[in-house]
Length: 319
Image (spheres, rainbow, N blue to C red):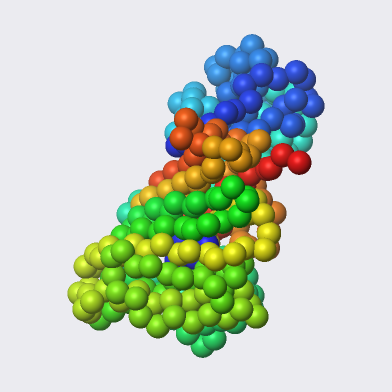
């Protein structure tokens, strides 16, 4: 699923065997930094001192926050410190900087809804979604923001997507908001069906030539400014022509919470799952991190105040 906008079961690499292992390790910045520090046998105070010798001043508290994942380097001086840390820890150039996740939201989330520039930043120029919506794309869901987004994806025993259930809490940014437009692409649009659970199904458009499904879900009445509403629905995909190996959402605002939950069949399980993000739809995936299957044969990832970009999970099937 695309549009409206990670604490999870994880199996992280925790041992290193020289530069090659560090470069190939799976994990975010905090995990790789922490494990490298432990393997090198260096204290944070000693690391701080070696940074200071190069004219780079970073507090012990900041280094501790970085390795525990409470914060991450983002400012120019912090990124300079990361480059120096790679040399101090005897790591290949870029092996730490490349693990830094997307910039985190700071302060109160504003009520400003996404505009055309924000949409194109995530969807890309002349995307299938923009082509499907036409002139409506410029005002795509511009009268509200998403507060929470929960998605459950069902993968069947043929390794194809059977259905996705979406639940959102939204807040109106102006008076008069009446419906949300939901868009799903890369599906067999002619056979897909949408079943609303909260909200009333309105206009449905199927564009098989673009593999795009568009539907409106009505709130039942116009919302007041800053009023919240809950919508939920299940989209049944119909017969899918190809195996599904990923699921992602294009996030244009900063919701308080985004949960992606992928359910597999017990007799057909993937050999690995990873979460990732991309700054926009046509840029490479970054911040790969292994996500474990639980006892119910599902994987999930949970984002708090996630930044606008593409967030998703991929998995690999055995051959």
